[in-house]
Image (cartoon, rainbow, N blue to C red):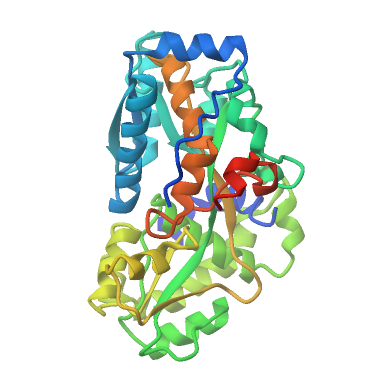
Length: 372
């Protein structure tokens, strides 16, 4: 029934599943010990504007980006403009259109929040700077690539310094613990729960990132021979592998919220539905999302989090600079600040965003570790 709709996404599901196995602080300038080259970057960026294209569906994230804007303005004289996206692919398509039109400079995007399929698409179509700029950021010194190799791989694709790590993510479910005493911590249990609690579950449809991630999470648990998920996509039988996923969806969809005739727009919409008790389980790719929402009074204290017993999806998200950025030096400076200890730890604060850091705490400066 639903196989036709999802068929065009089958390669995406398999490819993105391959790697799934794999507050405020006093201002401490990570530029204090910069080399001469980066000092020149800082000086040349004064007075420039940076168009930061990033998903705008979360008030907490939007507020955090505004805090970043105030910091880079105060310390570096950079004006950071948050261009709020509904879907990152829209920005990628714009950059691609500019490339086709021969617009090799003065592009509309200076910095882009990106990962996964969008990064792969940009890399394959030559939409990225090719100088490995991320590895040269002063703040990158606090990234432990041996301990966290996923900071230099984006869904299995080597980043080669073409994007800078920004935060970590893990797929989690949020549920109303007042109603649900034992959350369904497996794909099989979730299916049974959905059938028993008709109309109380849903997810955003692909290409929404959270919806796609949910289907990947299901696939990882439903596929018995997980070795096939380690193989290159071209060497897999996608139709055969995805059969278990289509079967699960065919059984579950008739019992969905509004009988699957319509779906939540995104995870923010799901949170509102959870708050209104229209659904009893929501989902996110931020492990602190539900605890943060409870802390901020957005969700009831009855809302708790859970993950599948056999493990949950995880990845790192990044920022990148397009090949034709208008202000690439200023964008590089903003990326460095986003990766700095003060920005990373401020972001990790559950009252701010709750997004886990990509830095190795043990590698941070002594004066920062004393504050933590």
